[in-house]
Image (tube, rainbow, N blue to C red; front, side, top):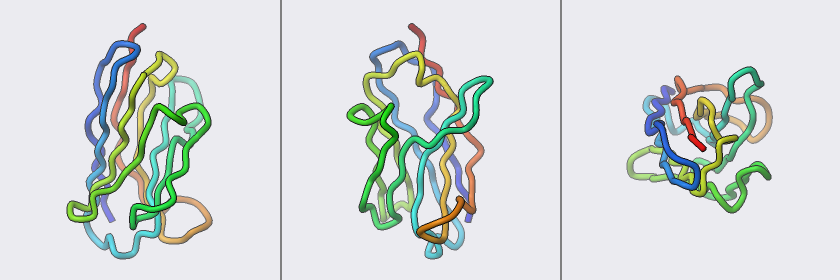
Length: 118
């Protein structure tokens, strides 16, 4: 499975961005997908996850009510709609996929940079 993230950029605080993550290869092996982020000088943190069928979204407390994770089954693409962005959302965002309901993620995209200016 290969993951290609895109959609990052520079946005003002309060603005919106939509990240995309295109999956290819043996996508039928994917159980769930998610977004993670890594701010400068910090560890990579969980942002949101959803099943490959598009069910059971789950969010980090820091983004609940502002971010929405979704899937397009026809395009094998994962999205992260980010609204009401804050400067603390500045990070490199990674999409990831895993083959099982538990354990770590097996596949990672290359990351896309989101910069929120205050």
